[in-house]
Each structure stands twice: as C-alpha cells, then as structure tokens.
Picture 1 (tube, one colour):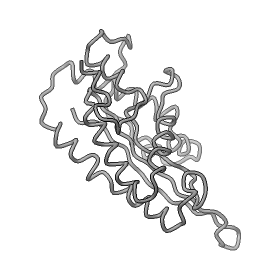
Picture 2 (picture 1 turned 180 degrees about the horizontal axis):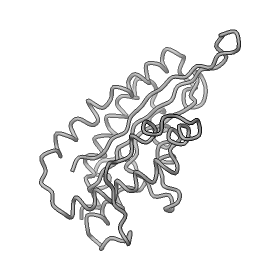
Picture 3 (picture 1 turned 180 degrees about the vertical axis):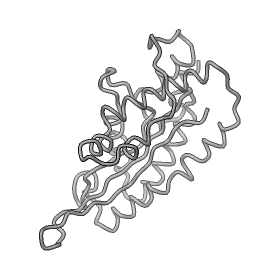
Picture 4 (picture 1 turned 30 degrees about the vertical axis):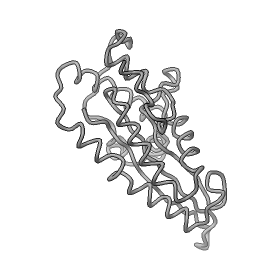
Length: 218
C-alpha cells in the first residue's frame, strides 16, 4: 500500500585534455508512483517539494513539476503518467534555463534541498500506509503498476538507456526494476474500481490546490 518513490541528484563536470573544466551542470529530481488512489499522499508530497524549492525562487517548483510531468510518461501508452509526478531538472547551469536566477552556490543548495527532501515528503506517507491491510485485488493492482514502471525504465528512462549504450554493468543498470511485475491481458478497469480511480488520479494536475484529486474518490 506504500507508493514507490524515486530520487536522485547529480553534478557533472567535463574537463579538457589538460584537465581544465570546460563545462559543468546539475540535474536530479524526485517523483511519487502510487499503486492505489490516495490523492492526499500526492498533495502532501508536492507540498513538501514546493516548500523545499521555495527558498530558491517561487518559479522553480512549477517549472520543475512541468518538466517532471512531461518526462515521466509512457509515450507508447498515449502519454500515460508513471505516477503523480514531482520535480525534475537536467543539464541545468547557473544562470540558465530554470536556474536563470541562481548562481552556482544557490544551485548547489537547491540540489541539496531536493536530495534531502524525502524525510518531509515521503516518510509521513510511508507511516500512513505501511500497516494498511491488503488482499489479492490490491496486490494485483500493485503488480500492474510495477509493470508500467518497468516499461518506463526500459523504454524511456535516460539513465537506463545511457547505461545500456555505454556497456555499463547490466545488473547495476537494471537494479531499479521491480523484482515482480504483471501484465494483465486487458488494461481496462471496471468503472469505479480502484484501478480506474488510480488511472484517473495519474493525470497532470495542480497538486497544491486544496482537494486536488479528491474527485477520484467519489
């Protein structure tokens, strides 16, 4: 009953033949992938992200969220979102793009804030869901959503594709895949079922709005 979370932050430098730095950038992000329709968890996650980003300018959360919504989507399934999103950024340099108002120190601070946000954004969700009862139906829905997660990682994820194309250690490249997943013969869910409500909840929306997503519980 606990949603899956992904988070990483990174800093890259490129050096020339003499060892001098010729380029450097930041990247990272975090997103939440629920297996059951719990809009209050998505609201809490996004509220924590917005709070973590707020000291670095009011626009970064919104732009990072839009980037995340666009990136974590299964294009081969009509743009179906992997989860309820979060924030994402890549190849970000001081004073450019989403960081146009940040110098190197501030951009480092932002990445540190994102890299340590799970205590506020995710831990309360885990505590709320870890002891919820479940049965065969809930397990089947979890395995179906795990399959969608696997599809994204194998077909669209930049890190996975980079690892495969550069002949990295395959077991390390694929370690983020779920150990068990299931592909149903039909992707359709009965109207009003948990699966149908979860699918509706995964659409792009403003998770900071009061009551966002609650219509899926009606």
